[in-house]
Length: 431
Ligand SMILES: O=P(O)(O)OC[C@H]1O[C@](O)(CO)[C@@H](O)[C@@H]1O
Image 1 (spheres, protein in one colour):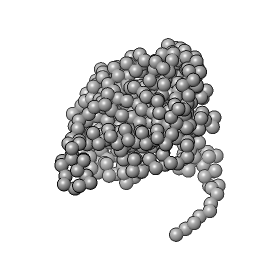
Image 2 (image 1 turned 60 degrees about the horizontal axis):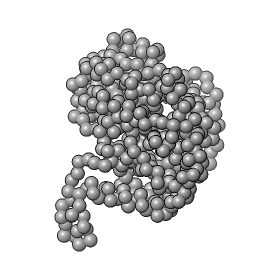
Image 3 (image 1 turned 45 degrees about the vertical axis):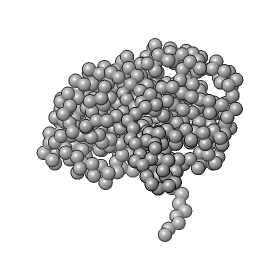
Image 4 (image 1 turned 45 degrees about the horizontal axis):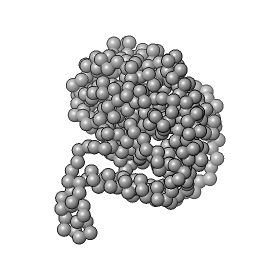
């Protein structure tokens, strides 16, 4: 990926960061890079994620999915990092295989998919590092029951990706299911370039080697200066802007195929950096759609936001038919791609003209190689930002409270968090 931070400079935007400030910050980037390199060399928890391009084995993944390679549809049962990386890849690339990501326990939504899909030609990809995530286990039990009710042997259609031990590992062993291991030392939100994110890609027939090659190329750009490394330039600039008041980062891909990548980024950024009362709030947006939705706030609301545009240089196009509608005749000489590009450039300039900081993240096109580079680049940007914030990038203790409360509410044990639920302060305004 390439990055253009020009519209985040203090000469353009407020908040903005001066070139001089970035040069001073580059000293911290150099120190952070040394820490990152050491963490990678020592295969330390979290930093190990940046070793995945050479750790992940595509042949092992393809061998595991071989029994269901003919699937017309794939249900991935997982949540957070155990779903969003796989969904980002699958939703970005064309495939004949329909993919469904059950990462919520909305009963109507889950049931609608199970009633609609051809279960006899559907594979199940259940993913959970811990093997104890309530939503994933609940959904897996529901999916398994639906297969049994349909007379389909789920054991012949299921792949498991999980940790060394735990309920899912036991299930895979008990039923001799094809299984893969969630790599040690890689938090879920950093695991897209492992079996966690790539089983779905393999079932869909995507080029795993190209995904990893794009990531490996991004790994090669990691250096001791933000001025030589797009990922570090992005991580350092977002950190500097947050320090200067841009506490919100709206990620706005100008491609429908990249919409899920903004959701993946939101977990990566929020769960890694939201600690010690620090962290920048990721917002999912989409171009051109949100020009008719959130752009008003981005351009004229509080000066507390950075907009991250994700753009592509090339892709398939489609002409706009000529029209005799006078005010719209200009459209008839253009293509949809030219309209999308013009709208992006206009929106980028609109924010710059209003002094609102924005950054471009540029991909050549949406393919496996470029996607691998985006995933890896944003992960490296996040690791660098975590070093600059001085937070524990790779843990997520704040998510445990609600999990304990949930278990307590469902009779899964005695949890004081569940008691607190009953103490809710109420001020109800009823219709
Ligand atoms: O892979 P698991 O263990 O099911 O965890 C799923 C997700 O839940 C979290 O642990 C947060 O609860 C995420 O960090 C993780 O990606």
